[in-house]
Image (cartoon, rainbow, N blue to C red; front, side):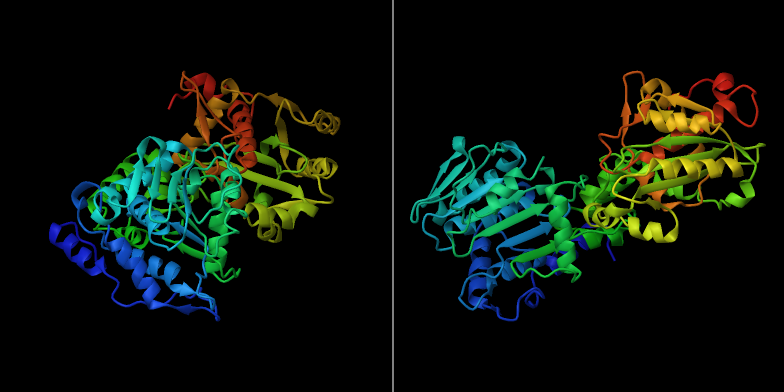
Length: 548
């Protein structure tokens, strides 16, 4: 049980401070062994260093239990030839857990204490400033350690340390990878891997650069990110697969401290699960304050989840509060809607992507809700590839009937046209709104079937009113979507762009995952609000456009 008083924090610190008993990692291969003397050496080296900042400054770097466990696993698990089993360590952990200090200590151990002649150790991050954070900590550790300060030359302007007895170096690298080939790497410390704009630097520093060394170490330490197409997410998925037994890689050491999306992010027990240094390097009061701020301002929720609970979020700021969206999962039965007036929104996206068609049924009286009926299609031949690539359960959704496939490796527009034609026989589809940059031929074909098809601009002018209205109706629980999982996923992915006048629109480029269903819903909702069940004035005409 977590307490906020000083005594409680002290007791927690005492409890968590030292590793009471050690058991080698479950990822140790059958042929490897644990060498206590090698592990003790690494631990002792680090604990001869000092903390450099805040209330801990100048105090011995006593490893917290989780830190010591990592160090013993990495440096103590050896192959039969006496070299380290793990050459890649992936540590994913929330902010303020002692991440930079641990990374700096590992960098110094590799540079000064690993017995490697002319070792080359590099500190990498998205930019030189970020990489310098760990370097500056390492330099201060050297200055505070008499034994190292006599033997290490600090070239601060170059962000370079030289361990003179072995002529080993620790060097910060900038993000420019043009000249980063030909290194003989003994160690790489990647700080905040999730901020890497692409995989170039990672590939250059880890693919073959350490082949001439007997036991190179790539130490990757990061907080969770929000780009699921990044190199960090790729490594994150590999780490998860190894942890859960889906993959085996005896050279890879995974550690992930975090919580699942289903966990109650406001629960202190959940905070403790994700923050192994809670009460030591970060006070529970700080996390409590951040949580309260996020509860008061929903725009901060994703930031709290990412930085404090180490959850991968889809965008830095979540627009749609999903707990509010889930409250609108009122049952929707399409048979009950037969003959009802409705309006369609069509987002064709691309032929190899998701195509979405959404029907919105306007309420017939004040007690009814706007009913949303979505349909989705993807190419059949790409289904399995997309599941593996995007880590999205398209196959499950297809089996459950929430998503359909069309033959071939592109979306078959003819199939979708026939499907919409059948829907037109069941429902009274007054209009179908579509992106004016969409497929001209399909629009003509739908018009030939007797549908009224209207172009819908994707700029602020056209998108802002219905986007704001969607949020208002969601918060008021005046929509019903039946909990359709593909549409929910789309809504959770929305990144909103705002102009100086306060107008908003979904941004497909900034949204890291698909939002086609959300865009189609917004277009259909606009037509449903404007036209309703008859030709009376729209809510926009009587009330004006919302500015929220």
